[in-house]
Structures are given as C-alpha cells and as structure tokens.
Amino acid sequence: MKLFLKGERCFTDKCAFERRAYPPGQHGQRRTKVSDFGLQLREKQKLKRLYGLLERQFRGYFERADAQKGATGLNLLKRLELRLDNVVFRLGFGGSRKEARQLVLHGHFLLNGKPATIPNMILKVGDEVSVRQKSRECTPVLRSLEDIKKHEIPDWLEQNPAEFRGRVKYQPERQQITLPIEEQLVVELYSR
Image (cartoon, rainbow, N blue to C red):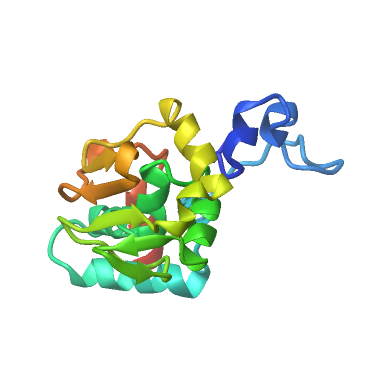
C-alpha cells in the first residue's frame, strides 16, 4: 500500500510504488495467502512506519492507550496524531512527517512560547505551535507553506500561516483521521 512517506515524490511518476507495485526480486510477483497474524502484523508495521516509530516506542504508545478509558485503537490513533512532529506536519510546516520531525529536533518550533525539541511530545487541547522568529526564513518551512494549498489542514487544528502558528482546537475523532489503517487489527495483534 502506498503510504506517502517520501513527501512530494509520492505524487510524481518517480514514486517506486507507481513504477512497481510488487516486492523486488524474482519471487515478488507470486501470490500468497496472508494469514490473520500476517494481516495484523502488516497493519502494525504500516502504522509504525507512517509515524516513524521504532518497536519499543510504538509498544509504549499502545500500552498507554490500553490503560486509558475507551476504545484502545482510537486512543492509540489520537495519541499518535497529537505528537508534536505530526501536528507540525498536519499544520503544513513540514513536507513529510520525517521532515517535520527533523525540523522539531533542530529547534525551529516553539510550543506555547517555549522552545520544543522533542518530537514525541503529546499536545493537549489549546496548545499552540509556532515557528521561531529566526526560523521563519528557513527554506523547508517556507517551501512547505508555499505548498499549503495542496495540503489540507484537519478540522481539529487551527492554522494562521501569516503568523507562522497553529493551535490544537480539540482532540481528533476517528472520522477525522484519514489514514488507511484498521486499528482494530493492531489491538488484536497486541492482545494475543
């Protein structure tokens, strides 16, 4: 499945998935029946790669989501969506989640007026993310803001591109998280 991990490249003809939609090698085109475990594992791997997490980090997010009240799968998706690097990406300050993560690590953003360099910080309702004054001429940020017309801002976020800032209005609901993920398969995998 095409996960759009390479930013703009995924929308061009250079996308590897568009050129060849099967695994490499001489056995890549054969059909195999995938087991239930295989489907669950594939969904987990897809979710991990979308957000750029390692196994231990992802497991920690799952355990915290499982400890919360409510549906575990929805809690997991909410926690992942409210990460600082993902919010920066969703606000259009980065071309991809990977680029947004690097911009956060390099200290280009302020969270509620204070420097934030930890990409996995979980934001709360009302938190405000802004670009540092020195970083407003930063090439990746400017390029991403020029491409903002292609990028749609979710309803749960509020963006002010003129002031280089955005705010979390409320926690996202499942229908607002438009990822091609079946979170119930991830919950079933970890519930084995």
